[in-house]
Length: 101
View 1 (cartoon, helix red, strand yellow):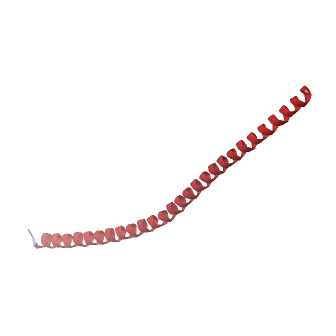
View 2: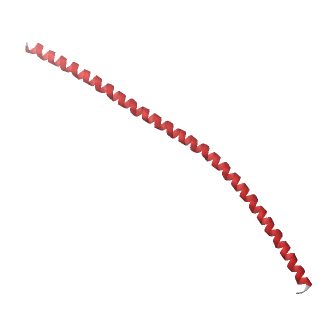
View 3: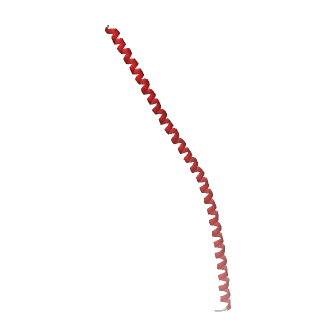
């Protein structure tokens, strides 16, 4: 192998090593940037998910409270209905007795 070919081979090998080192450094920087970006995204989504969970829990509490209020009003309606039925029955019974006498 001639000296010129050997020098060309050494130069080419050195250049390829420089390119490989530059690529490796760029790849490391890119991975570090991506890792930092994904960490930031995870933190933001954690806040969003926490807000959604809080809203969901609050909605569940509101719905449960509404169901409890409906049940309470149904009970009140049943009691008032029973009282109204008893009063109506008493009035009708009294009216029939008055008419029959």
